Image (cartoon, rainbow, N blue to C red; front, side, top):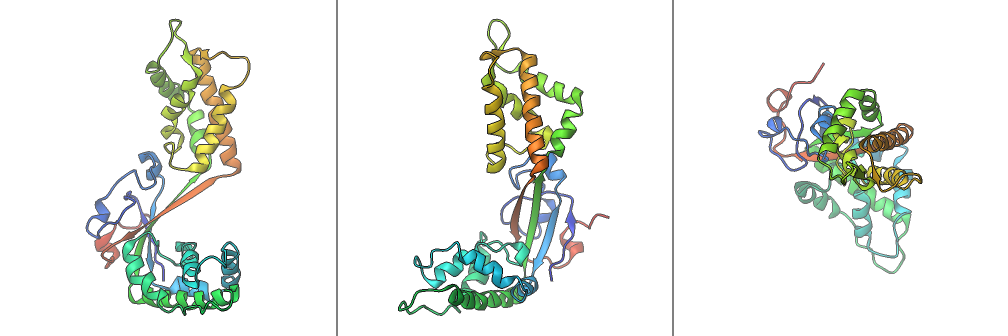
Length: 290
Protein backbone atom coordinates (compact mmCIF):
# COMPACT_ATOMS: atom_id res chain seq x y z
CA UNK A 1 0.00 0.00 0.00
CA UNK A 2 1.25 3.50 -0.74
CA UNK A 3 2.16 5.40 2.42
CA UNK A 4 2.72 9.12 2.44
CA UNK A 5 4.21 11.66 4.70
CA UNK A 6 5.00 15.24 3.87
CA UNK A 7 8.55 16.51 3.70
CA UNK A 8 9.35 20.12 4.48
CA UNK A 9 12.74 20.03 2.74
CA UNK A 10 13.63 19.89 -0.95
CA UNK A 11 15.35 17.22 -3.01
CA UNK A 12 17.27 16.88 -6.22
CA UNK A 13 15.72 15.36 -9.33
CA UNK A 14 18.21 12.51 -9.47
CA UNK A 15 19.05 9.23 -7.80
CA UNK A 16 19.85 9.54 -4.11
CA UNK A 17 20.66 7.28 -1.21
CA UNK A 18 18.72 6.79 2.01
CA UNK A 19 21.45 8.49 4.05
CA UNK A 20 21.67 11.55 1.81
CA UNK A 21 17.97 12.08 1.19
CA UNK A 22 17.02 13.87 4.45
CA UNK A 23 19.89 16.33 4.09
CA UNK A 24 19.35 17.26 0.46
CA UNK A 25 17.80 20.68 0.15
CA UNK A 26 17.81 21.98 -3.41
CA UNK A 27 15.78 24.29 -5.56
CA UNK A 28 16.32 22.39 -8.80
CA UNK A 29 13.79 19.55 -8.53
CA UNK A 30 11.92 21.11 -11.41
CA UNK A 31 14.30 23.97 -12.06
CA UNK A 32 12.24 26.08 -9.69
CA UNK A 33 13.23 28.88 -7.37
CA UNK A 34 13.79 28.17 -3.70
CA UNK A 35 10.63 30.07 -2.85
CA UNK A 36 8.54 27.73 -4.96
CA UNK A 37 10.10 24.68 -3.39
CA UNK A 38 9.29 25.94 0.11
CA UNK A 39 5.64 25.98 -0.85
CA UNK A 40 5.85 22.57 -2.51
CA UNK A 41 6.16 19.64 -0.09
CA UNK A 42 7.54 16.32 -1.23
CA UNK A 43 5.44 13.20 -0.82
CA UNK A 44 7.12 9.84 -0.23
CA UNK A 45 5.42 6.91 -1.95
CA UNK A 46 6.13 3.27 -1.14
CA UNK A 47 5.15 1.42 -4.30
CA UNK A 48 4.62 -2.25 -3.52
CA UNK A 49 2.29 -3.23 -6.37
CA UNK A 50 -0.92 -2.95 -4.39
CA UNK A 51 -2.05 0.25 -6.08
CA UNK A 52 -1.07 -1.08 -9.50
CA UNK A 53 -3.06 -4.25 -8.84
CA UNK A 54 -6.01 -2.15 -7.71
CA UNK A 55 -5.85 -0.25 -11.00
CA UNK A 56 -5.64 -3.48 -13.03
CA UNK A 57 -8.77 -4.81 -11.32
CA UNK A 58 -10.68 -1.54 -11.52
CA UNK A 59 -13.56 -0.80 -13.87
CA UNK A 60 -11.54 1.90 -15.64
CA UNK A 61 -8.54 -0.29 -16.51
CA UNK A 62 -9.81 -1.54 -19.86
CA UNK A 63 -11.13 1.85 -20.97
CA UNK A 64 -7.88 3.60 -20.03
CA UNK A 65 -5.80 1.02 -21.87
CA UNK A 66 -7.94 1.15 -25.02
CA UNK A 67 -7.59 4.94 -24.97
CA UNK A 68 -3.79 4.60 -24.89
CA UNK A 69 -3.79 1.82 -27.52
CA UNK A 70 -5.81 4.02 -29.88
CA UNK A 71 -2.85 6.39 -30.07
CA UNK A 72 -0.51 3.61 -31.21
CA UNK A 73 0.10 2.55 -34.80
CA UNK A 74 -0.60 -1.17 -34.48
CA UNK A 75 1.02 -1.88 -37.84
CA UNK A 76 4.28 -0.28 -36.74
CA UNK A 77 6.12 -2.35 -34.16
CA UNK A 78 5.77 -5.56 -32.20
CA UNK A 79 3.53 -6.34 -29.23
CA UNK A 80 6.58 -5.82 -27.01
CA UNK A 81 7.13 -2.37 -28.54
CA UNK A 82 3.50 -1.38 -27.95
CA UNK A 83 3.48 -2.66 -24.37
CA UNK A 84 6.68 -0.75 -23.63
CA UNK A 85 5.18 2.46 -25.02
CA UNK A 86 2.01 1.89 -23.02
CA UNK A 87 3.96 1.41 -19.80
CA UNK A 88 5.51 4.82 -20.37
CA UNK A 89 2.02 6.32 -20.11
CA UNK A 90 1.45 4.94 -16.61
CA UNK A 91 2.29 7.19 -13.67
CA UNK A 92 2.62 7.00 -9.91
CA UNK A 93 -1.13 7.57 -9.79
CA UNK A 94 -1.51 4.13 -11.37
CA UNK A 95 0.99 2.66 -8.91
CA UNK A 96 3.84 2.64 -11.44
CA UNK A 97 7.32 3.92 -10.46
CA UNK A 98 9.14 6.15 -12.98
CA UNK A 99 10.65 4.31 -15.94
CA UNK A 100 13.41 6.91 -16.13
CA UNK A 101 15.16 5.07 -13.30
CA UNK A 102 17.63 2.43 -14.51
CA UNK A 103 17.16 0.24 -11.42
CA UNK A 104 13.39 0.13 -11.97
CA UNK A 105 13.88 -0.81 -15.62
CA UNK A 106 16.45 -3.53 -14.90
CA UNK A 107 14.83 -5.09 -11.84
CA UNK A 108 11.11 -4.53 -12.37
CA UNK A 109 10.19 -3.70 -15.96
CA UNK A 110 12.50 -5.93 -18.00
CA UNK A 111 11.73 -9.09 -15.96
CA UNK A 112 8.00 -8.38 -16.31
CA UNK A 113 8.29 -7.98 -20.07
CA UNK A 114 9.67 -11.51 -20.34
CA UNK A 115 6.13 -12.86 -20.02
CA UNK A 116 5.11 -11.25 -23.34
CA UNK A 117 4.22 -13.90 -25.90
CA UNK A 118 5.89 -13.25 -29.25
CA UNK A 119 3.44 -12.47 -32.03
CA UNK A 120 3.54 -14.86 -34.98
CA UNK A 121 3.24 -12.03 -37.48
CA UNK A 122 0.64 -13.84 -39.57
CA UNK A 123 -2.24 -11.82 -38.18
CA UNK A 124 -2.42 -8.10 -37.40
CA UNK A 125 -2.04 -7.00 -33.80
CA UNK A 126 -5.40 -6.02 -32.33
CA UNK A 127 -6.28 -3.96 -29.27
CA UNK A 128 -7.85 -7.04 -27.68
CA UNK A 129 -4.64 -9.01 -28.19
CA UNK A 130 -2.57 -6.17 -26.77
CA UNK A 131 -4.90 -5.74 -23.78
CA UNK A 132 -4.56 -9.40 -22.85
CA UNK A 133 -0.76 -9.29 -23.05
CA UNK A 134 -0.50 -5.97 -21.25
CA UNK A 135 -2.61 -7.19 -18.34
CA UNK A 136 -0.23 -10.14 -17.87
CA UNK A 137 2.74 -7.77 -17.83
CA UNK A 138 1.03 -5.39 -15.40
CA UNK A 139 0.17 -8.25 -13.03
CA UNK A 140 3.78 -9.43 -13.16
CA UNK A 141 4.93 -5.87 -12.46
CA UNK A 142 2.69 -5.75 -9.39
CA UNK A 143 4.16 -9.06 -8.19
CA UNK A 144 7.74 -7.83 -8.64
CA UNK A 145 6.95 -4.58 -6.84
CA UNK A 146 5.50 -6.60 -3.98
CA UNK A 147 8.76 -8.52 -3.76
CA UNK A 148 10.93 -5.40 -4.17
CA UNK A 149 9.01 -2.24 -3.18
CA UNK A 150 10.24 0.99 -4.75
CA UNK A 151 10.41 4.25 -2.78
CA UNK A 152 9.52 7.29 -4.89
CA UNK A 153 9.81 10.96 -3.96
CA UNK A 154 6.91 12.69 -5.67
CA UNK A 155 6.52 16.44 -6.06
CA UNK A 156 3.84 18.52 -7.74
CA UNK A 157 3.68 22.19 -8.59
CA UNK A 158 0.60 24.11 -9.67
CA UNK A 159 0.85 27.56 -11.20
CA UNK A 160 -2.50 29.25 -10.55
CA UNK A 161 -1.58 32.93 -10.63
CA UNK A 162 -1.74 33.35 -6.84
CA UNK A 163 1.96 34.25 -6.64
CA UNK A 164 1.50 37.01 -9.21
CA UNK A 165 -1.54 38.36 -7.37
CA UNK A 166 0.41 38.48 -4.10
CA UNK A 167 3.27 40.39 -5.72
CA UNK A 168 1.02 42.89 -7.51
CA UNK A 169 -0.84 43.57 -4.25
CA UNK A 170 2.49 44.63 -2.71
CA UNK A 171 3.33 47.70 -4.77
CA UNK A 172 6.36 48.56 -2.63
CA UNK A 173 8.00 45.18 -3.24
CA UNK A 174 7.04 45.20 -6.93
CA UNK A 175 8.52 48.66 -7.53
CA UNK A 176 11.64 47.84 -5.52
CA UNK A 177 12.38 44.80 -7.70
CA UNK A 178 11.76 46.67 -10.94
CA UNK A 179 13.85 49.66 -9.85
CA UNK A 180 16.75 47.29 -9.27
CA UNK A 181 16.26 45.74 -12.70
CA UNK A 182 16.01 49.15 -14.39
CA UNK A 183 19.33 50.30 -12.94
CA UNK A 184 21.12 47.51 -14.78
CA UNK A 185 19.42 47.97 -18.17
CA UNK A 186 21.19 49.85 -21.01
CA UNK A 187 19.72 53.32 -21.65
CA UNK A 188 20.02 55.91 -24.39
CA UNK A 189 21.14 59.50 -23.89
CA UNK A 190 17.65 60.43 -22.72
CA UNK A 191 17.55 57.72 -20.08
CA UNK A 192 15.08 55.60 -22.02
CA UNK A 193 15.24 51.82 -22.39
CA UNK A 194 14.35 49.59 -25.29
CA UNK A 195 11.02 47.78 -25.25
CA UNK A 196 12.97 44.62 -25.97
CA UNK A 197 14.18 44.64 -22.35
CA UNK A 198 10.66 44.06 -21.05
CA UNK A 199 11.40 40.34 -20.95
CA UNK A 200 14.54 40.99 -18.86
CA UNK A 201 12.57 43.09 -16.38
CA UNK A 202 9.86 40.44 -16.28
CA UNK A 203 12.47 37.80 -15.51
CA UNK A 204 13.65 39.82 -12.53
CA UNK A 205 10.22 39.68 -10.88
CA UNK A 206 9.51 36.07 -11.90
CA UNK A 207 10.74 34.37 -8.70
CA UNK A 208 8.79 36.79 -6.50
CA UNK A 209 5.70 36.19 -8.65
CA UNK A 210 5.92 32.43 -8.22
CA UNK A 211 6.98 31.84 -11.83
CA UNK A 212 9.65 29.30 -12.84
CA UNK A 213 12.74 30.22 -14.87
CA UNK A 214 12.20 30.37 -18.62
CA UNK A 215 12.65 26.99 -20.29
CA UNK A 216 11.30 24.88 -17.42
CA UNK A 217 7.60 24.69 -18.29
CA UNK A 218 6.88 24.89 -22.03
CA UNK A 219 3.19 25.70 -21.65
CA UNK A 220 3.98 28.58 -19.32
CA UNK A 221 6.81 29.79 -21.58
CA UNK A 222 4.36 30.04 -24.49
CA UNK A 223 1.89 31.96 -22.34
CA UNK A 224 4.57 34.45 -21.24
CA UNK A 225 5.96 34.90 -24.76
CA UNK A 226 2.51 35.59 -26.15
CA UNK A 227 1.75 38.15 -23.44
CA UNK A 228 5.09 39.91 -24.04
CA UNK A 229 4.62 39.91 -27.81
CA UNK A 230 1.17 41.47 -27.57
CA UNK A 231 2.37 44.27 -25.28
CA UNK A 232 5.62 45.28 -26.96
CA UNK A 233 3.97 45.40 -30.38
CA UNK A 234 1.02 47.53 -29.34
CA UNK A 235 0.75 50.72 -31.44
CA UNK A 236 1.34 54.11 -29.89
CA UNK A 237 4.74 53.63 -28.27
CA UNK A 238 8.15 53.88 -29.87
CA UNK A 239 10.93 51.36 -29.46
CA UNK A 240 12.49 53.40 -26.65
CA UNK A 241 10.37 53.99 -23.54
CA UNK A 242 10.58 55.62 -20.13
CA UNK A 243 11.29 53.50 -17.09
CA UNK A 244 7.78 54.08 -15.72
CA UNK A 245 6.32 52.88 -19.02
CA UNK A 246 8.38 49.71 -18.82
CA UNK A 247 7.08 49.12 -15.29
CA UNK A 248 3.54 49.54 -16.55
CA UNK A 249 4.14 47.06 -19.37
CA UNK A 250 5.56 44.49 -16.96
CA UNK A 251 2.56 44.93 -14.67
CA UNK A 252 0.10 44.51 -17.56
CA UNK A 253 1.92 41.41 -18.78
CA UNK A 254 1.83 39.90 -15.30
CA UNK A 255 -1.88 40.69 -14.99
CA UNK A 256 -2.53 38.96 -18.32
CA UNK A 257 -0.59 35.86 -17.25
CA UNK A 258 -2.31 35.88 -13.85
CA UNK A 259 -5.79 35.91 -15.37
CA UNK A 260 -4.94 33.06 -17.72
CA UNK A 261 -3.49 30.94 -14.90
CA UNK A 262 -6.46 31.63 -12.64
CA UNK A 263 -8.75 30.38 -15.40
CA UNK A 264 -6.54 27.46 -16.43
CA UNK A 265 -3.89 26.52 -13.84
CA UNK A 266 -0.82 24.64 -15.09
CA UNK A 267 0.32 21.64 -13.04
CA UNK A 268 3.56 19.71 -13.40
CA UNK A 269 5.07 16.88 -11.39
CA UNK A 270 8.40 15.17 -10.82
CA UNK A 271 9.24 11.70 -9.52
CA UNK A 272 12.58 10.40 -8.33
CA UNK A 273 13.41 6.94 -7.01
CA UNK A 274 15.02 6.94 -3.57
CA UNK A 275 17.55 4.11 -3.50
CA UNK A 276 18.28 1.99 -0.43
CA UNK A 277 14.65 1.37 0.66
CA UNK A 278 13.50 3.39 3.65
CA UNK A 279 13.46 1.07 6.67
CA UNK A 280 11.34 3.30 8.89
CA UNK A 281 10.03 6.87 8.83
CA UNK A 282 11.86 7.83 12.02
CA UNK A 283 15.33 6.92 10.78
CA UNK A 284 15.02 7.89 7.15
CA UNK A 285 13.00 11.04 6.70
CA UNK A 286 11.76 14.08 8.51
CA UNK A 287 8.75 13.68 10.73
CA UNK A 288 5.33 14.43 9.21
CA UNK A 289 4.09 17.97 9.66
CA UNK A 290 0.96 18.45 11.66
